[in-house]
Length: 264
Image 1 (cartoon, rainbow, N blue to C red):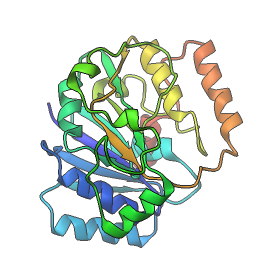
Image 2 (cartoon, rainbow, N blue to C red):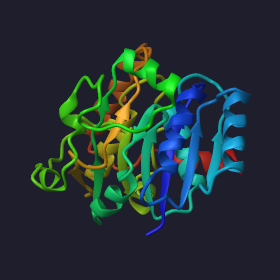
Image 3 (cartoon, helix red, strand yellow):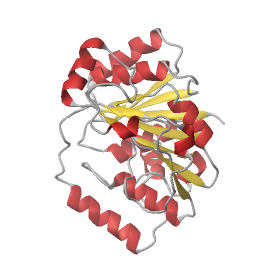
């Protein structure tokens, strides 16, 4: 199974550098890393170029024009560039446990997508991390605001019940087979602004017969503190989500195929 790790980012190269460093530190290196860049300036491009020169990672920079918050389209564009059979999504503000990739490989199961969790770092600890370039954390690390999510236990991870709802859905720690993603036409590009594009994506996966598999205490990531995103478009995004739920929608018209047409 060839694994593609997709990292979303926007104009925060300091954070992206720590994330890439944590990917370098994996016990199993992903076959490729694609940075899904939602319109960052040249500083992010330079970071990736410099990182590629000094690493064994295969990093692909997938950039789109800065035209507002378009995470759905940015992920779709990155997915189109991928050559992997299996896609793992993370955000550019989440530092990965050394076993993150290997845990996702072990958890992968046909007919399922994976939903993981995250431990949250405090504002104070995040600032300290940027000064120290720290990527090593555990349950005992200072500055964790939901410490239970930093418990690493393969045994406990297997006792956590699965479900088929959208509660707690976050694309910052999500994985799926590429073919399952293509069967629903990927993320819905109609989503602009923060919120619900990942939930709507999951609803269509479930409507298409793909089951949710939760992993807790496994595939751990540590989320760097930042100010909350602007939720200006949340209500309009929730309208799209509710329509998908109500009408049992399995396919979005404005998805990956639209990007194929746009880019020839």
